[in-house]
Image 1 (cartoon, one colour):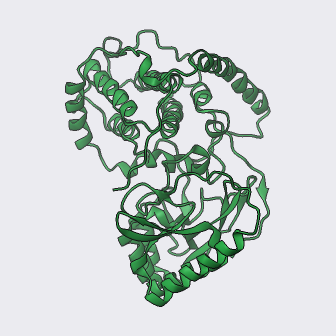
Image 2 (tube, rainbow, N blue to C red; image 1 turned 45 degrees about the vertical axis):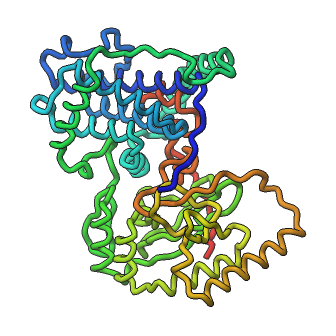
Length: 450
């Protein structure tokens, strides 16, 4: 297992994440209240002076759930920016204390609430892929052409400003202080041990979590089967369609956007009916399209897809070698745990499973590996006489084939360019927004780079 050294949290960062967690709990309790799950909720609830005053969600459980989900997504982003195991443990203990104190258990917890609590805990544990996929494929409900849209948008920014100012002032006042130098008081009085036991019982009875969505989802029409693929189809549904209609799918390496100022190409599974389109930032639009990144699938699933499409390992090795020859400056050979790897500089180093941007030497023949080495040596010879402005590169990471790269900075996750204010204003202001997600509508006419 590859490990990555975690940075030391500052006092400001630790307090900020705890505040976002607190806001998330406010919205969770408000949702439970509006959904009227418990007749004695006034006695059960733990937040007596709930600061959520939004009138638009009153009497509407679906809107209350959406508002909660937006803030939960903000928490997910904050935790990804501050990947501290000790911080996650602090929040999980608080969450379990709340479960214990509020009196929810496996017998009285409604199915929908079970799903929400299960998804909340996934994010606290660093498994936020589900909500990220739901955000990318959400059904847009905000009418940007409405007469009052600009006015509402301005009020959102105005409402966020005091919190942003407060955050900047606190960051100044806590300058040079480390996270462990500030004391944070527990919010809830229950037992974390008892709450964890109760939660585990609830989690074991959760219905199929793939069928649950934090946001309303789009529905995708599969031209290959004539049927409907759900807005967030499972890997097995996608693979089955590939097997049934291989003539309508392809694995292709195309331009997907920019990363650190450089063009990025990825191997994608693409349905032939998909219109390749880019957003205003030059990033490939994934949401609402039958187009999937290779790292969404496990190694075994990739193998199934290749077999269905009649793509051999030798063909892929040849493609990798040609890519190294053309863009050798973005590749390197590195020995990790006594094994030799060919690694692209945008790969993610997280677990011991590999994706399409990192390849073990064993997959190549001796002749192919010699080609790789010669291509890299030639690239270094050229780069040694040319100026470079790349500066300090980020640490290399190992890309995982089993899930999308969600453990990176928010701008990397935002491949469809439509996550909105949460990614563009700040995580903290997203908490204030509590339900508004901007949509970039302008399209960028850009040719696909083959």
